[in-house]
Image 1 (cartoon, helix red, strand yellow):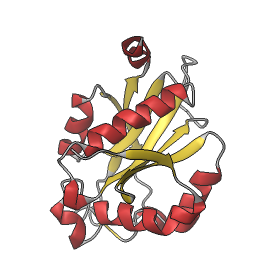
Image 2 (image 1 turned 90 degrees about the horizontal axis):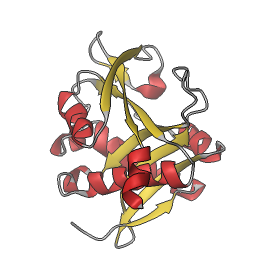
Image 3 (image 1 turned 90 degrees about the vertical axis):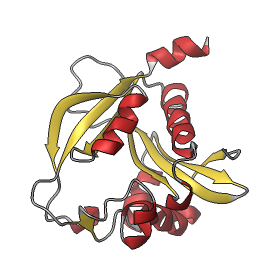
Image 4 (image 1 turned 30 degrees about the vertical axis):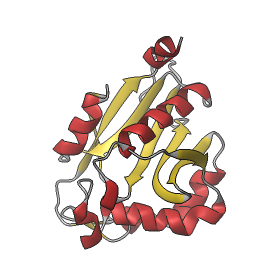
Amino acid sequence: MTTLAFRTATIADIPALIDLVTSAYRGDASRIGWTTEADLLDGQRIDAEMLRADLEQPRSLILVAEDGGRMVACAHVAEDVADDMADDDVPTAYFGMFSVDPAIQGGGIGKAVLAEAERVARDTLGCARMRMTVIDCRDELIAFYVRRGYVRTGIRKPFPYGDARYGLPKRPDLRFEILEKPLSSLMETAR
């Protein structure tokens, strides 16, 4: 694996972020990697307005991983202030928009970015749990997260059909499943 440098994205990174995220999930170019959603969705995966909102939101950041100054991966990490599942007062972070350049997927970069995102959620945002949503028919992707300590909650949410900002579905049965992982074990490991 290469040596990655991590930083927080800025507004100036928006065009490169759109290119990276799109390449990882949409169109024929995404098919060289294993994270493609090209058989499930057409259209965009992210746009400049959505990225700007993520970057300007308090307690939210887009983590960028670079190799030799080239952006190779990113992820959105934010305090989950709209946590409609919280009945236990556990500070929770949201993880999303996880993208690795498809030409270099499978080399450990994704694992490193996920670990850094968990560290940021814990150490910077003060969260004790990470939560994400994954399209529930993405078995290989869900297995990747389960191997890294995430648990399938069995809680499902509807896919935003009719909102082209999230893509154009190719099938009528898409929905999200919520996965989560306690980050307190990371604190104990770091001691």
